[in-house]
Image 1 (cartoon, helix red, strand yellow):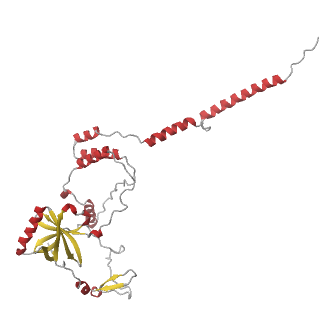
Image 2 (cartoon, one colour; image 1 turned 120 degrees about the horizontal axis):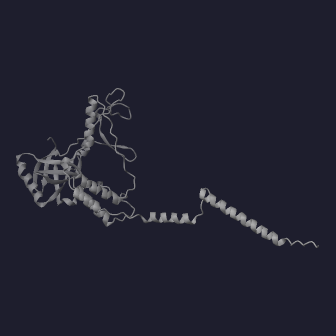
Image 3 (cartoon, helix red, strand yellow; image 1 turned 60 degrees about the vertical axis):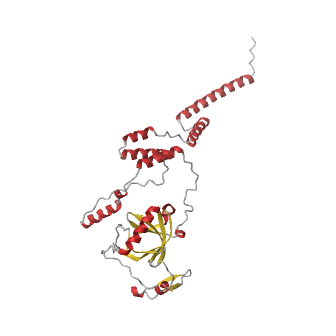
Length: 339
């Protein structure tokens, strides 16, 4: 592997000549920009804003843009004159337990290779010291024109270094956590634990980028003039309010069935928790029933219409009877004619 930096590890008074090698590589598929009309490549040209002319690389310098837009030119000579003790040295400043390093700080990874035969002994000494102490080394180093923070640890028989972000480069997670107070029941935690245990561990080596494989297949088909049938993507499930207990139970069962654990799946069925209906819903249903009983029947229905007719007829009959009685009382009896 090609080295990207040569220098030394400063370990107290011990100096270990090393070469820095990239430990990772990107396998992402990159694309070029083209003119869709004729397929020609689209390229970027560096143009000066003042004279609107393309500028050669040799004529391009660097500057810092001030808050008011003023450009402050900075030359390579200006930067090289600054004190940078770690320009060619990885300076170890402390040894700490690995648990003290927040994974949020981790950046690019490198392998440190002993540079030459004389470096083999001190290199091995540092490696074995790190192994036995079960600690990692915190170091400062300079790369690509700036000083950086690093963490040295042992990977197999090699010393690896992870670039670290400076503490002030890590943003605080303010306003990210849910603000609503939520109560988690023991039954929900038990099911979550059961799901974690069922999913278990995974061989990292068995994982691969499915999307990248699909893109490669698409490119190969396009190159041969074959059009692939588009696959319908699964519908997104975001934004739905789910029954957490039911989802956990189903997840445990599905995970166990996927692993062929029939006995575990039966146990999951037997251990299912019966969900209690929310009180709010029961109260609403009861309220509806009570309101239905208390409210008068609508006049638009057949039953209520016939009932209204019967009531009206009864009222008319009663009214007639009352009227006759009243008239009888008011009219005096007729006198019989004398013989």
